[in-house]
Image (cartoon, one colour):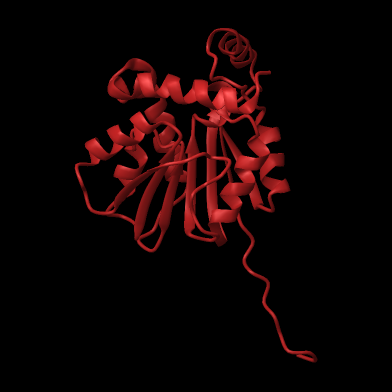
Length: 218
């Protein structure tokens, strides 16, 4: 596989080129349906501080804004973030920043709910990305990672084609492997929901609540 920094540069260039037509072309409209279902799995409430990692042009952030305390998106592509800000039109509660999923530009425990849809297969170090997701979630915070799942033959064929013809593509993971990434990062209550005959999976989990501390003898 190419060096991680090279993969990230290619991914950034790929999405910079896609930004102007994203949400209007058939592929991104198809992706939007899966994103809506993954967002629904988070069961957002008005007290949530929501982050979308790999936010693209910010559709999920715009959908959440106004329903939650805070709605933010981060993406490696500067053009995607610029387009997200343009589409949000300065709407209250929607914020977008340029950043790397493996080095999220946020403080520990800054969010309560985190979404990552159809971008996980671009990450050279998925374990690092999941650890960063855990870091920026407060205890009890929820995560939903949704992406193509290498559990189905058709998805594995697509994976092989993308590895060959799309330089930014790293690889799809079986749903069980994404579950293991979450478990290694300390998430609990991990579950998977399959879409499209198992070719796409939404994997959810929750950060454990902080352990309570009692005085000795109580």
